[in-house]
Image 1 (cartoon, rainbow, N blue to C red):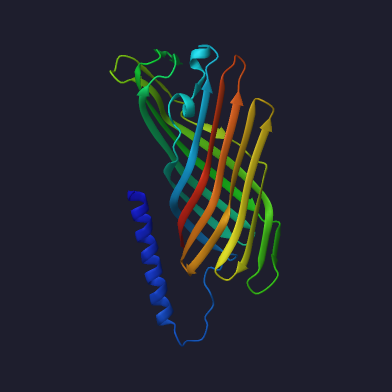
Image 2 (cartoon, rainbow, N blue to C red):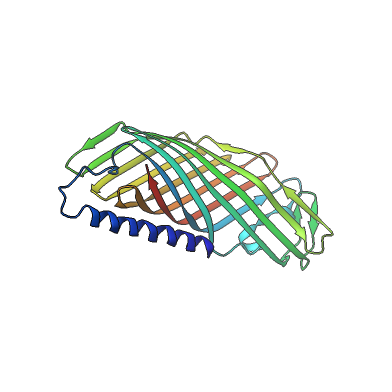
Length: 276
């Protein structure tokens, strides 16, 4: 709720400045629009990712007890609201972006089945507590080989998107609520070099743009990865903007010995944009 409040306050400030600027420039000749969507600029996006949650792991050394579906077995079946931000540098045919998304969740419940989590073991009916804490840091470089101005405010950009998607597990825990047993799964850094991708942007009007960014990677059952973000940006004033997007992050990997991990986050992404 606090995140919504902060976002709404930023939006109100933006609209207030927009109104003040419009009043100030009333009666003046039209000046050049600073920061049209297809022009060079810096952008800072601050917002949230409202998404469904799926995380599934199998530890081949532990057996069936370690076949753990967080949605079904640990009640991660709600939609989650997480902080999201990015910084982009745009210059003609190049866009360089660095982003950050926080994924935090936790539950308390009676175990629905016998569970094995690394070196910890829980029996069905035992009171347990789970915590999920993962951070996502994507680094993207888009090269718009096709960059065409068709009209005064109509612009097309299309080209390859090179991406390094990084996941940091700050702590994935499963503990007994009485403190008698528990364990922590943590891998400091998981880089996914999803170099195969495409980026498309179209500016249809002076104050808006549509975009699609897609990356994918596939190595049979050993690694599958999809990262998609598509939506629109609206620019009510020359140094502010609002982005409405659909976002989908999917990754699945399997190792010899039966170890398996799958995650799937998809939902609505909204950001307040500062341009300078």
